[in-house]
Image 1: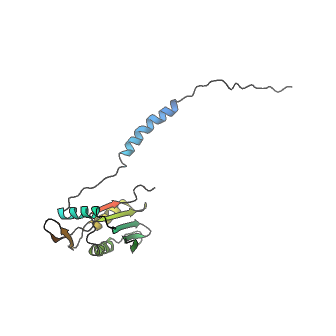
Image 2: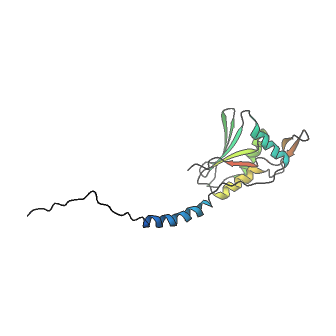
Image 3: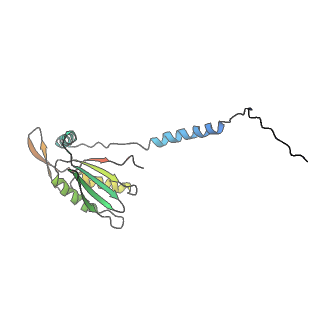
Length: 180
C-alpha cells in the first residue's frame, strides 16, 4: 500500500475574518473612554490669604538652591519627613503603630519644621500604594494648617512687614503619580 502524498498549494488565498476583532474593539473603546473619566489629575483650589499666595510665588521663582520637604508615607514605615537642604537629607520618622498613623505627632513635627523653615509653603507627598485614601487626606489636612492657633511669620511685600499666618504647607504636590 502506498502512502498518499498531499500537495499544498502555497499560492492559494484565504479570507481573514475580522468580525470578532471588530466586535472586541467596539466594546473595548467605550470602556476605555469611561475609565479615563475616573483617572485624571486634579488640582484642589483653595482660597489662601494674599500674603501666603505671594510667598508661594516667591518660593517658586527663587533661583537659589531650594530646600524641599517631602512626606513619605507607607503602612509599614509610617510617615517620614525628609528635608533636602544643601545636598543633604534630614529624615525624621514617625512609625505607624499596628497600621495606624500617629497624626498628632506628625502635626507636631510639621510645626517644628515650619518654625525652622518659615519661607517654605510647599510639600511633596510620596505615598506608597498600600496607603488608604482616608489616611492621605488626613495627612494633607495635618500639613495644611496649624490646629492649635500657632502662627508662623511670613513677609508681606505690600506693607513691608512680617505678618503671621496659621498656614503651614498649603501647597501639597504628589510626586509619584506616574510610578507603577
